[in-house]
Length: 173
Image 1: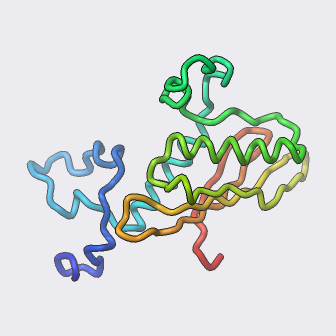
Image 2 (image 1 turned 135 degrees about the vertical axis):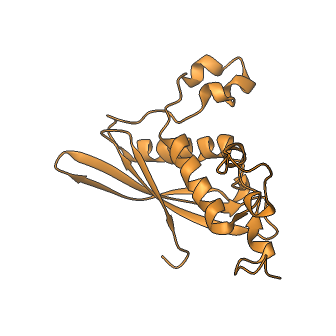
């Protein structure tokens, strides 16, 4: 079934994330049409990519020890972001810690990826001209959809600056 003469099928439309619902892209319109209340799968994935980039490029402000007495504060927006890794040396143990930290952070703050399917895998590292980067693949099934849609994200971390660059990988990549 097509949606109002476009090539987008009804089952390919999903509700946008909370941030996108709060953003008024048509402030002069008095009412919101149905086509502005739903997004395509491409837009849905792009919003997840954008939000993961916000999350992974935000530093959590409190060390885990500060949350030992309060489980809920540890998972709240008070601790939004990831433990900074800039300036770290990258040993094998540190790489596993980075994978685990990224996976736990995404599991805590990105509810559109099914936790049971979430995987973070280190696939390479590069050191040139004193600049060290780590390459990871993040994958997981997206929620809430009629059928599971898997998303693959290539992530490059600049160890010197702590900046995460993310882009979606197509399934055949």
